[in-house]
Amino acid sequence: MSSTYDQEIEDLLALYQRQRAGATETRRRIKETTGTATAPRQSVKVTVSAQGDVTRIEFPTGAYRRLTPKELSEALLTTIAEARRDALEQVARLADLQLPSGASAAGLLGGTADPTALLPETPGMPDEVRDYLENGRSTGGDRG
Image (cartoon, rainbow, N blue to C red; front, side, top):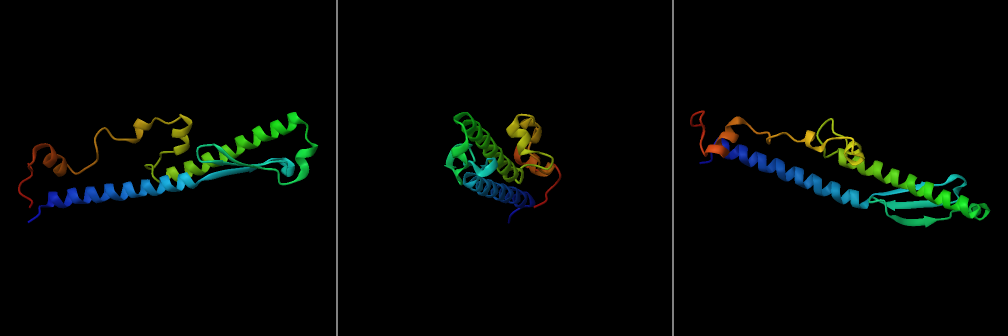
């Protein structure tokens, strides 16, 4: 016969497995994320990966031909930076789904949030489960 504690432990394990599956799905979606930006007058279009690596550079129109080398260089650098911001914003939105309420992936990624503030000193669990794990028995009487 299983005790109430056994059920609580099974529930905690099931919660952990759901959280892990959610994190795996978020990771998959992040890996598929791309950011894209187009320069003014469509002189250049850039696509980057979630990690910010340039994966594609396009020249949708002939507008780039009218740019000086310096202007084209500036257009490329600016557009790459915009595409990276786009990818980072998308990744942050996906990551926010896995974070506790009030936490922001943008804050974590930008270095403005303290990641240790997101985690409790000790894992949350009912006192009975904590007592059972620490002592192997319940101090609240026989519940099983």
